[in-house]
Length: 99
Image (cartoon, rainbow, N blue to C red; front, side):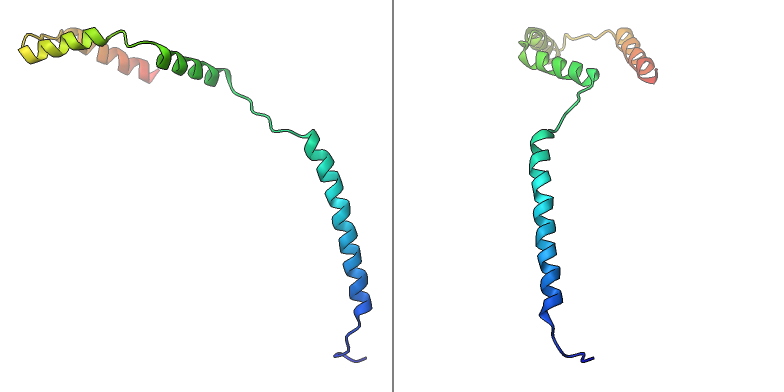
């Protein structure tokens, strides 16, 4: 047996089989890709958040006048916040956060 001798016949048979296998693999993929589609499922919570965000962006700014009034009170020095109410709201928010 000669090691340096090159015999193309076995390699040719192998490469022909590889071409046939590649052709066989591409046909089912083209048929199955038409049948399969990507599907996205959105949870009810995500839908609710999306609806809330859309409603918030579409609604007009109804507190604009209140902000202007408060800004004027702060500038003139007449703004007197209710410290107890502010503290109660902060505590309520923290309790709600811990639940």
